[in-house]
Length: 133
Image 1: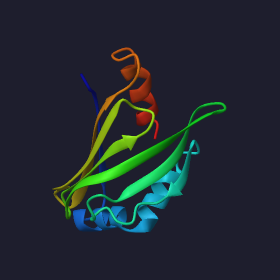
Image 2 (image 1 turned 45 degrees about the vertical axis):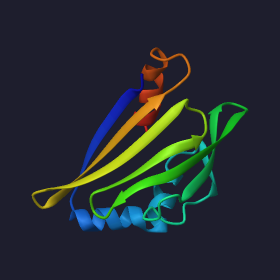
Image 3 (image 1 turned 30 degrees about the vertical axis):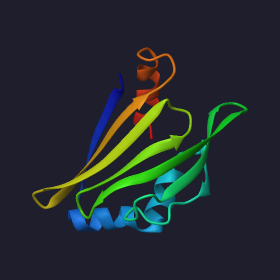
Image 4 (image 1 turned 180 degrees about the horizontal axis):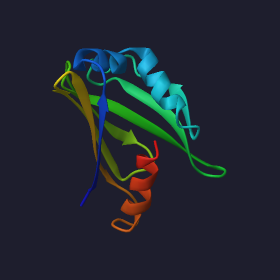
């Protein structure tokens, strides 16, 4: 059974501007650059194109690296985009990026369902790693 991690962030901008940031290449580059354990091998062409893939190399532990291929499987402008792991460190991984307006602010909810080796014990340390990003 997948573990669920959810994080909500509020931004002082319209939802259209926040979504546009994620659509543009600079959004992906900026967000990935925050995690020094991730190297981009291939950036996604566009989150709006179903089937677009991002290929990353992630450092799991010193000297242990794993290729991670994420594929975009869902898109609704200014509402949501979804990616899943096609290959990588998880048994399964699905990430929904949900956007909504909250008055004059925007809310981004990262809803992640994942399975990792040694579930359910691993969900605690994996969730902490995700949260720190």
